[in-house]
Image 1: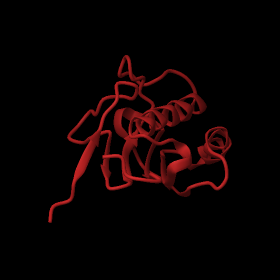
Image 2 (image 1 turned 135 degrees about the vertical axis):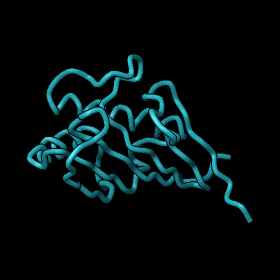
Image 3 (image 1 turned 180 degrees about the horizontal axis):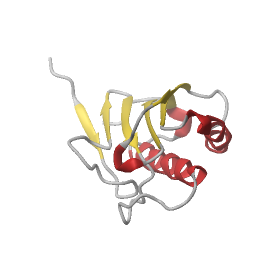
Length: 133
């Protein structure tokens, strides 16, 4: 028995810059690929400080989640990758603007480098209340 996978794609988030999909839905679970602070219209890294970059990443994740039929309330796991873990308090502050309790499970990982030299990347797992196929 093969697994039915549905690819999620939206112009409201940056297009994939490699061999991956923006998200893949299997039954009622959606796996959102990593998002970096790219402007979806220009495909360029947003100018500004890390707070602006973090907001852009959350906006990109939200666009993909909504394209899959969900939103941040449906995210059960969030992974945050930072080139400087000193920016983690800023992630917490901004995350509180996008999420409400109960918050998703989360990991924050310090990494040496990220695509396009950005300081932050995030991916997520979302579970929908029912499958929409």
